[in-house]
Length: 79
Image 1 (cartoon, one colour):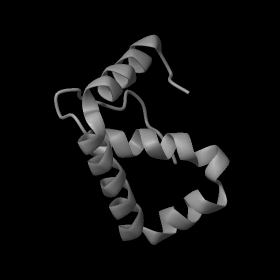
Image 2 (tube, one colour; image 1 turned 180 degrees about the vertical axis):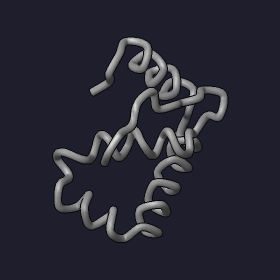
Image 3 (tube, helix red, strand yellow; image 1 turned 135 degrees about the vertical axis):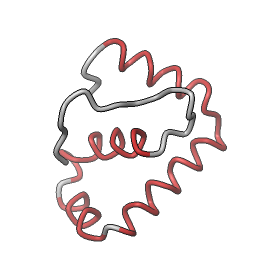
Image 4 (cartoon, helix red, strand yellow; image 1 turned 90 degrees about the horizontal axis):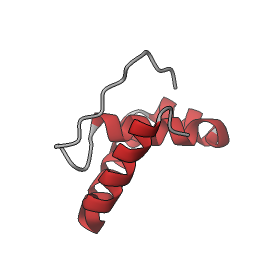
């Protein structure tokens, strides 16, 4: 699911240091973004198996729970 070992390591670091407050914040921001974009929410619901992991990655890129770990797309990503 991660495109490189560096991305995997970054995700692990983020999970280790995020804590429950940051997890709650990330989840609530993800839900807010999806509610603000109902077409994307519908698309995610219809194709959850294929789009769930890319949607989570994109949500963490847009609003990372820890601002010290930057996440930048290295190539265009379509969801």
